[in-house]
Amino acid sequence: MVIIFGAWSLESCGVIARSEEAKQLGTPMGVPFFKIQSICRQKKISVFSSNYALYGDMSNRIIHIIKQFEPHVECYSIDEVFILLQGSDVLDLNTYLLA
Image (cartoon, rainbow, N blue to C red; front, side):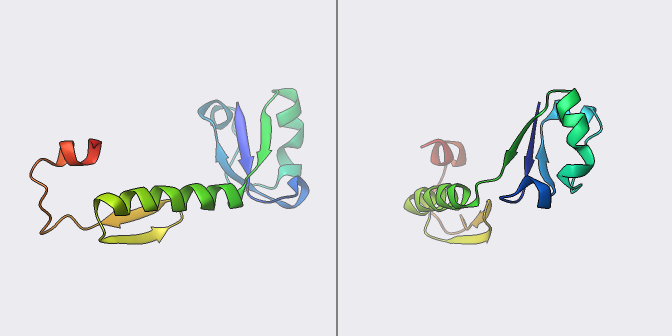
């Protein structure tokens, strides 16, 4: 069971991601750590701070790879992009995306 918090200090942050098992135990999104700290200890839920520098780096790497296949990329957020395939020479989308 895993919960990820969105800050460098667990005392001043809220839940931003939870494993399915942690969800089933009733751990809500956005709640500050201090409000569920005892549940985490009792249920042996692993707690981690997010690593935005690493996440941003990985996002940039993925976007770079996508742009090698299709230059028309719109970055919507750190983990979402849109690609424009209209007018592309792609005939078989499955082959193109799995290349």
